[in-house]
Image 1 (cartoon, rainbow, N blue to C red):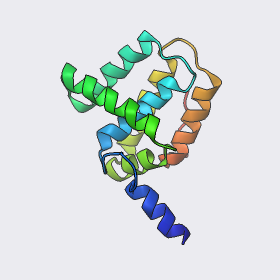
Image 2 (cartoon, rainbow, N blue to C red):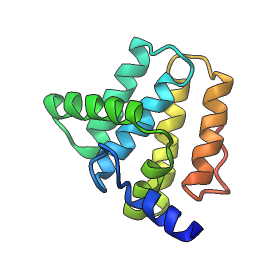
Image 3 (cartoon, rainbow, N blue to C red):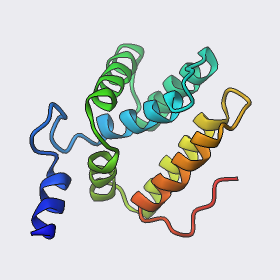
Image 4 (cartoon, rainbow, N blue to C red):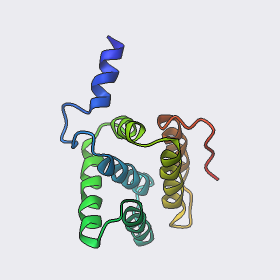
Length: 136
């Protein structure tokens, strides 16, 4: 029974989340990192847009669309597990490490590492199956 529940969660069934869309999953997790401390700064938004543009080779309109999809998807999801599952399926360990590095950049972009950001980095490292990852 437990295995079927995990399988259902990994498939992302039952929500508005676009099925298996890794770019939306990444954008949702990046947005979650920006918002976890309760304040989204202009510097964080700039970092967010730069990372998305470089990571997925997007133009400004595509970045804007993905940013909004990520924010909406994050807001409508009860957990980060479906996003992590999609990322784990689509990305090898090196790409997951790159996502973690981007998350660290987002957490530090406003000049202050909030304790909630540190906890989120630790949680996501576990979800991405990166037990050796340590956020500096």
